[in-house]
Every structure is written in structure tokens, then in C-alpha cells.
Length: 79
Image 1 (cartoon, rainbow, N blue to C red):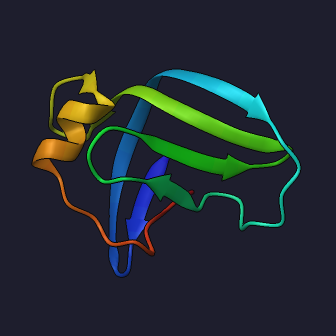
Image 2: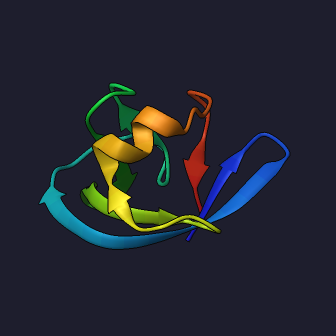
């Protein structure tokens, strides 16, 4: 998938996730995060819990490590 932040788009591989079924009215692809330990992504019928990922040009890492080194805007989405 791709992480879009304004005009910037980066490729993001989701290597380990969980899925929680939950009804919602949020925009698919929008992120929920505390910017320290977790990232959840709203999608059809629930949300993904990201556990391990890889940003283009970087090594694979747990989400908490990713959040320590990468800052993104609250309006960022996954496409």
C-alpha cells in the first residue's frame, strides 16, 4: 500500500497485521495512532492493527520502532 501525507506518497509494506471487526463511519484508510506505540487503519467493516511494516528504502521493523523514527501528519492516510 502507500502512505499519503499531503503531496508526499511513500510505499509501505504491511508485513504483520491483525484485523478487528467493528462498524464505523470513518474514512477508509484513515489512521489512528498515539504516535508512540500503535497504528490502526480504518477499513471496510473494521480496522487493521499494524504490527510490523517496512517503509520504502528502510528495513522491516515493529510499529513502535517505526514511530520513534518517522513523523507523519495526522491527516496521513493509507491508499
